[in-house]
Image (cartoon, rainbow, N blue to C red; front, side):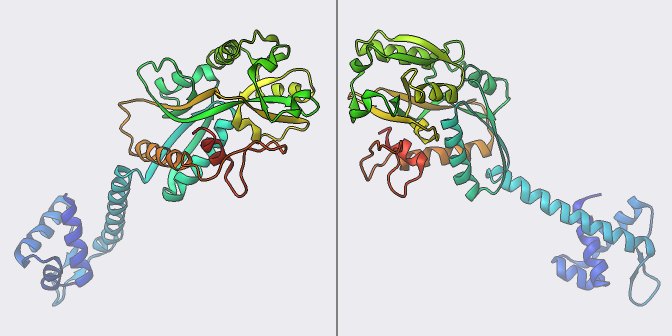
Length: 326
C-alpha cells in the first residue's frame, strides 16, 4: 500500500465520483480507478459499492475512510516535525552549568532562545567543575558552560565571555574605604578559596593571581560552596577573590571592590562535541554567540556601587556581567 493510494481513496470517497476525484487530483480517470482496485485487492475488501448509479462507500469503506484521514494527518504532522527538527525548531537540548552565576547565564540564554524556539525542550543540569567535560563526553549533556578549561578531551572549548575577579569583603572591613583595591592590600588578609579538589582550575588561578601581585596569602579556609564562602566573608572571617557575577547573590553585610588594573579575568566557555549534528544545538550556539557579542558592546561605563551591584540602571544583570568582560 502506497501513500498515494490513501490520498486517491479519500478523494474518491469525498467526491463519490471518479471523474470529479480525478479532476481534483489532476490525473486522468483510468489510473485512479486502477489504483483504487489495487488498494481493494490488497485489503481484500470492497471499499465502494459500484452497483448503483452513483458510487457509495461500503460499511468497510466508511471505517477505512475515518482511519485513512487520521493517517494523512499523522503523515503531515510527521513531515512538519521533521522539517522543523532539521531547522532546529523542535527537539531537546541538555545544558550543564557549574556555579550560581552560570545558572543565571543559562537562564538568560534559555529565555532568549525559547522566545524564538518555543517548542524545544531545554533542561539544565548542575555539575561540579570537575564533571563538566566528562558530562559532555559521555552524553549526559549536549553542552556545558565552564571556566578556565585547560583540556577539552576532544571537545570544542569555545570562549564566550571574560569575567573579572573582584574582592569580596565584609561591609565593616577597612578596605571598604577604598573604591579600588590593589592586590598587595590583601597581603595580611585571611583568604577563603574554593577547595582545590572541587575546582582545581579556579583554585590555582586565584593563587596565581595573588602571587603575581606579590601576595603570599594566608589561606585559612577552603569552601565547598559559594554561599558558605560569602557567609564567612560577610561575617568578617576572611576575604575572597570571586567572579564578579556573584555580586548578584543577596548576602547581607557583604560588599565588593574592583581590583586595581590590570584586572584578572576568568574565561567563561562552552564545551560541546565537534561531531554533534543536532540542529537544536547549532541554533542554541548561534543564539549564545550573538547574545554575548551584543552584551560585549558597551554603551555605558560599568561601576561597582555600595549596593553590591555591577548593574547600571535598567540593565539586565547578565548584560552587566558581559559588559564587565570587555
